[in-house]
Image (tube, rainbow, N blue to C red; front, side):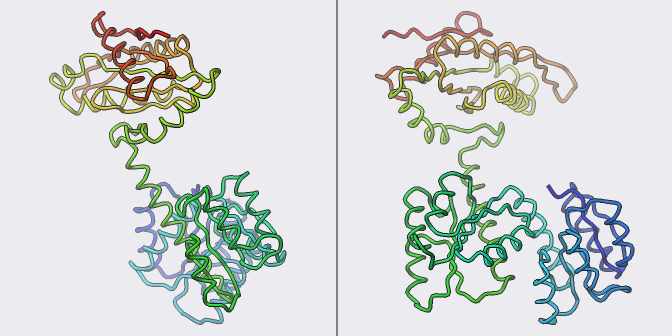
Length: 420
């Protein structure tokens, strides 16, 4: 994560505006400010900065400080009041993060967007597939300046292997390569990965106009024709990552309960077929389900209000999530009910796990808006999947056991009556 940024800017009005907006919009980042290249050098020698945002022209430097900072290993984003293309190309060639023309509100919005993108890039891995070693090294250096993790391959076959073996977020691939070209690799990737799951940017110097159409029809997200500028490639990559992150966030929101942050029923129906298929196929991989219900939940809402009721739901959800294995799947099933799918777990072990969760919830306090401390309990029903069951039958078996726990006095776990 970007935690500390140095601003080098001698214009007091511009720096004041920039710092005010950046500190408001990015409160988790510390912004230090100096006015000269000499002050900046002293800061860099004594402090570690994740990013430096610098004016190109300073009272004691006409841009030399940028080159010096980059050579020292700093990631530098340059601001400039002028748009001289020669100077801009020289700066970009020195491997700065970006070159932004000065303004006020408009460019601050872009600056904030870039900082957020750089933050996200730390968790992204880019695969560069290119048969020329010098070009691979050029790409790597350029992309690493954007906080991206870079993996390389020299042809499509090697690239395809790395896609299968590693977690890759974006592929940038040349077209003409030995053994397997970029189009053939894309065709193989699209058999298992969608355009959202693994975006693909094709690069080629091919003069045939139909090459662009071939890549796009095969499922490339974008196409760049050589020669292109470094700035254009970085913009395409960052825009692509922004778009994919937005689509993935929308997809996550569709399968996530907004109040508790747990997966919802839509997510359950996505993963359940795979879980049942594994349990049906392999006898040594049993599947169990536990249905939990918050005891006397209506009382909390009626007595303390819906704000307390929401807090109860959130605390129970948090307790379940923090005390489950990574392989277990807690679901906000509806109302005050929670379903936990437990792969590789038989009835006996599921009961032990459910009992542990029941005790953990009972030990947890909820504080009302008035400051009163209240305790919450849950009841649960445990069932194990059988080959003759579908998902609804498994849930009903767990729900029937939950009903038994309620009838027996609540704050307890019961096991489903299952034959066979």
